[in-house]
Length: 419
Image 1: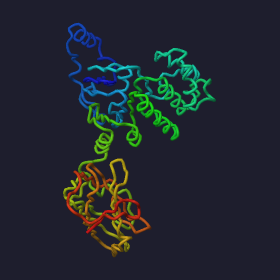
Image 2: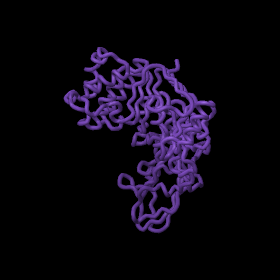
Image 3: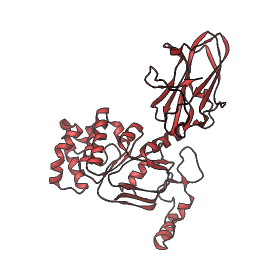
Image 4: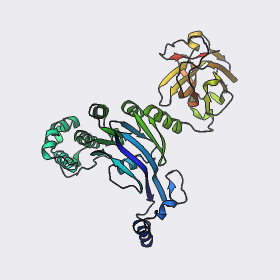
């Protein structure tokens, strides 16, 4: 059963001005759309919402042509960069504002927590605000009273429940607001990034409650967050928005990978620009993977990763190369740090140097995109330099060739091997 349907939804704003800017334009728009039932003439000149550019029009699509369905009981994570249109989408669903184009159909009551203190009157006490919010949602006083103790207990604000909300901290306000939205039994629960204001204990409780709401009670949850770990643990499906346009929709894991891949890849950036630290007596001139000095994507069908490090040192070095593979969210997968275990250290004299590593890519990593960190270090002592997110590798399935067993390193990760 479809719980929410977004059908070619768009929201157009005029920058800096309410309306079209002049009375004659407002009348023209009214005549065209309301009387003649024609398309709004000002929709044609809107631009996509790329906040990093000045653009050529005062009309901007905060959302444009958004279409997808949400099934009853689904927990959907809506992710994207700041300004991508996530909060606008939830405000349209919550009827805080209306879409410029398209329609939204929702089945059941909607409980929204979009900003700290949403729907709260600062002069009223926490108890009074609970009753007011419940009444707005169409609940009777008896129904609200039945849920009152649970709401107060979950929010953890019993001592302040008869104190005006204006004296609450932002964290206390969010606690109470979430408790009201979750315990009033809406068919659709809409939660924006506000949970980030709460402490770790409350975030854990809130995520647990949203899981209960969706799985135990069969209610629908739309969850906006920049915390990919929370999205991964809570959501089954994911929607990625980019500059107001639907960029991806699918399962949560694939949506997170799509979002992180777009935000972490930097095109033709030199790998040496990924160096975040190096000793003052070392100068790294070039790092390349499979012959490329740029952090572009490498496909694992090449089976080997050739790493070359060129530099100058003013002091003698006894070092090893460490390479760590990670998921796009930073979870480590595999590491190469064999020098300390195999006594395979580089002993470099002062002057220019060149280090080459021929690393066999693992056959056990499933299909998907990963990134890698590279460092040169003295075993169990210090790093000579560290480069993060310096190369991206796309694994396109398991290898089918026979290979030597891959040892488990002492760091608890699968160990990469070099030849």
